[in-house]
Length: 98
Image (tube, rainbow, N blue to C red; front, side):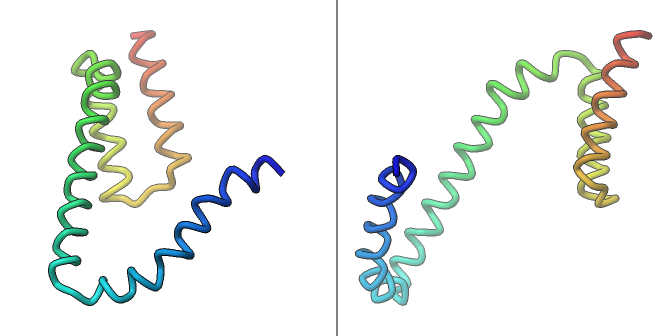
């Protein structure tokens, strides 16, 4: 019941605004505004990734190499996220031992 009442206001708001949004979405000005908001959100997410995650998580060149190899595995080799996580854990433990 709590879950229902937690999400109900958002669902009702979406249902109420949807017909209005369909009329507005065909206008170029509205589409440009949404594109601008999306760009701002991406910028804020990048800043949030950099400040707490990158500054606290990447503390040495070894961490940078591990993260770079993980990113390359994700983007270039299209490896499963499970393999990337296993790689990061094993590489970090090995870096601590050596």
